[in-house]
Length: 468
Ligand code: AMP
Ligand code: GLY
Image (cartoon, rainbow, N blue to C red; front, side, top):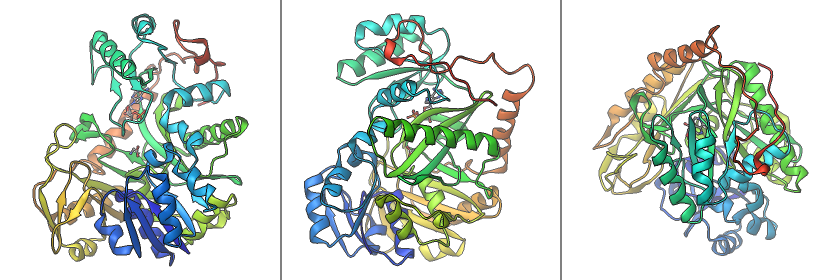
């Protein structure tokens, strides 16, 4: 089976590795030359990942038999529609389904219309004139979100990204003036987790839950990034996430897919729910229409012993054999190696030398992201996330220790979050959740899916509460 992979980051490298392990051949369309994918691919084309015409032509000329689209931009641009139009089975929703990620406003309003549980309160200013009244009416801490794609970096959280609502107003108005939408959302307290699923006509099939580390600096300081690293736990839950709450999150995914279908939008691809586990249960922060990066790397590392090519083909053609859904009962930790200054002012161009064999000897795999080959065992960092190191072990902290040991085989100027997957950090997260659930700590239950005064009527929906 010859697969076309669209995209050139570490997530796409991980997809490529999983397909190659199943004996698939690969061809790759991406704007950058990814050293890891280049090693695996029979043919590559350098192009903008949103250039449907060029990618369609490459699919034909390279003899691709199916396609998997990694990043959000080509999904939002309708590249999956182009490929399906050329009768290529494709993993990834069309532009209409991808709106669940590319328009936070569409997502919130869709879920409100269908009474999908687990939504925070929100309001959406239709114009700059709505901003001040809506902010004044929002009687609890909030977050400001541009509605469109921002690579995880556009969200402003009250108390960490701003303290004065006047700054929130300026930010919201600047996004509106530039033609984008804005959503104000109640600020939720809890622990974040990601639940991804394979979605096709025959069902919604979950992967192991993962926790991503979005903030640039240790101790969850600094700005939001695409994700500095992530971990998953042996039982596919998380230290603070019991099965009952994972199941509630899965119900939110399943009902959201049903909501899309009810509006005539089919979905064949990956659906990623970003959740906050609060004292009242899981609340949806966002959907992504693709594998998380880095979370997809955790899940794909564990995929075994099934045939990944057959699984993805099932997703693309509408019917998945549930026997193919097998993930090892092991823990994983991913850490991203990034250029110094990443998250504020990244310094591109630094050289890294790496001893891949020595890294593999530590039980750690390297996935290549935003780097270019610069000689034997040497890569040049760009401004984005460079290399993902993924370690696997029985316990999370052991997987983290493996990645730390592997870092000794990497030389050059780089930054990495050493706190991801440590015993201390895991204990802190467990304790955070325990403190929120402690008697007396529980805030009064909030009506969900109900917009504050001043919001347009379309954002109001029936109050609905998941049992906890
Ligand atoms: P998003 O792009 O919606 O996932 O937001 C990026 C990050 O902002 C999330 O991973 C959270 O850390 C934070 N965030 C988003 N929405 C909320 C919310 N309603 N309450 C608290 N933090 C949030
Ligand atoms: N790690 C978050 C994302 O993939 O959007």
